[in-house]
Image 1 (cartoon, rainbow, N blue to C red):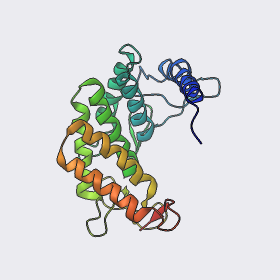
Image 2: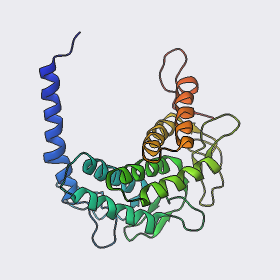
Image 3: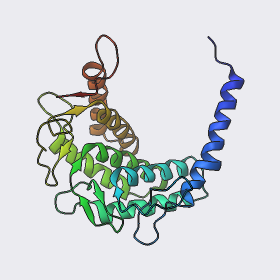
Length: 238
């Protein structure tokens, strides 16, 4: 059945309105932590800060991505770029492990380390968001640290025998023990997010190693992770 162009345009306009008049203004008015750096990401139904004493790598990096992408799309008059830079400052100053490399999984509101594991799910969003940040602003810190994370993932997480990437590591990059959520498992979710990360990383860097790694991940998703009969994703495998 052919798509109705008018309905598509109406849907697009509605999505744009929700994004630019509701979602982005909500976060721009609330998320900046002017006291400790980074972003506040826990609010109640009325938009009030819940006081949650956690800043996760997922939330911080995704907010950097959102602000960078919004700025790159021409929204915010420079405000989104300022927020993205504020978030990158916090990620590098408070969440980067200066001894072993990589970003910690969570810190508290003040930026003190809470969970020091290196988890590829979060690190994939670091590569994604930091590459987008450089594309949006030109600040080379983004691609510098995205490249560092990529190199660490290739060094410690890549399974050079069977392909794909292990996901759960201790602070010093020792693989976590086996079991559900353990170091011996690989997941569809993480490898999908790695595809996003490698795509934007290559767009930013134009380095052939990033392109080759992206193609390898796409091949893995199509040939090993999608179910051969039903074409659905296999959530977890070894």
